[in-house]
Image (cartoon, rainbow, N blue to C red; front, side):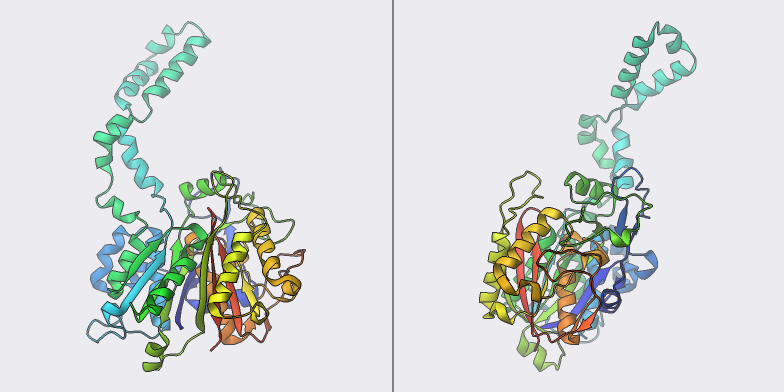
Length: 469
């Protein structure tokens, strides 16, 4: 049973801000403000304003020193977990260490999807600069300033040669870096950037001593984590789990990698970011990054019932597959969508639900043309003539692509749709071929089952079936 929702997005922390924005059809995509993006072809993203979240406000006072070694990804996961725990009305060590926990520590698991955290550029270069060959450069520049070097240059070719020599002398000396320079990184530097540190901090804060794992499969990570938590609970290894994912790529290194992977729309700072992301639209020109993701509380039904918990819905089916990726980066996947369709059908089989019983689909819907085409093909393969009648729930136009946390957001949206019997609004898409994906306002709907699908960079796919109960 899904008893707690903890999305964390550019709209803020918790399901309230996200759901309101989705239903109102609002987007948080704007020009990047955390650094100057003017040198990048994509200069927009969905950032969360600082005033909406401070990690120190969601950890116990005794743990606040640990926030110094939290990269932004870790902060987001910790914030999402706190929101999920509060939403589920659980007592954990972080909530009240004096009271017995709602879920015994040994029966509380944690599975978090994470990305390969990009190091802070200022922090990294402050150490790298110590391994530049600065002494030779300094002496030559001093000589040049006094005119000694300039007068010795007979022609333009000599000037170019001297320039090349100076550049070579100012390059980073990797031998020095390996022996000495690396030691100039800040203490505990590595503990900020290991992917498993998201789950590590969450489990320590909430004293989750049950099965724990980290999954790094790009956009499918959060959905795969939820699926693992489901199986852990089903086999009796835990009574409840914190599960989901989070990632922050809105930094120079993260943004550059996405540009090289050809996943982002070209958009300068003057472009209206609200209209850029267009899932399943023939005019789609790429996606946009977002920060965040989400953590859910999953509980065995008998555990939830015993404590009188309310729930959003029931997770009744899960499956995962791998698509073939013909390129090195893993951006382009097989466009026939066969592997994505396999995941969807396997999840339906596991849930013992027929395709005719699915009332809505929450896909990745990234606006990345190759992935959109594969997802669209998969949906058509599975639903055939019903395809145009099954409404899609899209979230990337609102909050951007949150990468390892991306699939947690449509899961949270699907759970809210089941609880409220409401389909949120959709944005921007105008000409989705054969799909019920065009822009529309929020509306009431009779929803019994929702299928959530994720197709991650590198070809990992996940599908989950949620049921109203």
